[in-house]
Image (cartoon, rainbow, N blue to C red; front, side, top):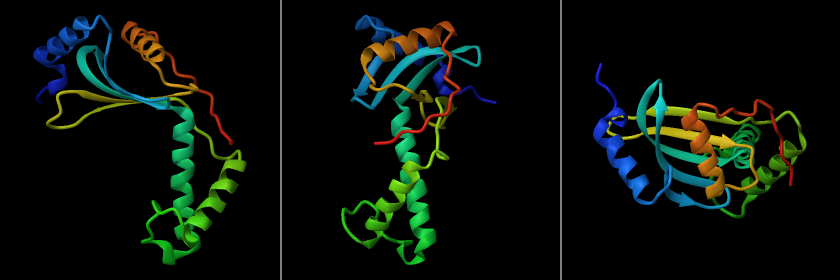
Length: 166
C-alpha cells in the first residue's frame, strides 16, 4: 500500500519552511468570523503529516444541519418541490422551507456536538481535516490555540450536544 503524499517528507518540510518564514505554527489561507482555512504539520496516526484544515463554528454546523433537514422535509411534504431551486429568495417552496426551519429551531431534538474528521484524497498533497468547535468566533488566536494543543496531543473535544436559536 502506497503512503499518502501528506506524509511525504518534502511536503512536510516545505510547509514547515513556509510556517517558519512567517513565524507561526500554521499557514492561514482564509478567515472570517465563522470559518477558517489553514495548513499545518502535526502527527496523524503517529506520523508527521501536512494537514489542510477547515475550522468552523458549531452554530454554523447546527444551522447547516437544520437547513438540510428542512429541505428534505419540504420535499417529503410537497414532492412537487423535489427539483426546486432552494437558493432562490422567493417562491412557495421557500415559504415552506422557512416555516419548517422555524419549527426545527424551536425543537430541542436537533442538536450537534464538536468533532474532528480527517481523511486523504488521491492526488492531494495534504491530509484533509474538518474541525467543528463550539466557539462564538473563529480568529487567529483560536487557530493558534487549536494547532498548539493538537500538535501536543492534548486537544480535547467537548462531548456536550448543543442546540441554537435566533
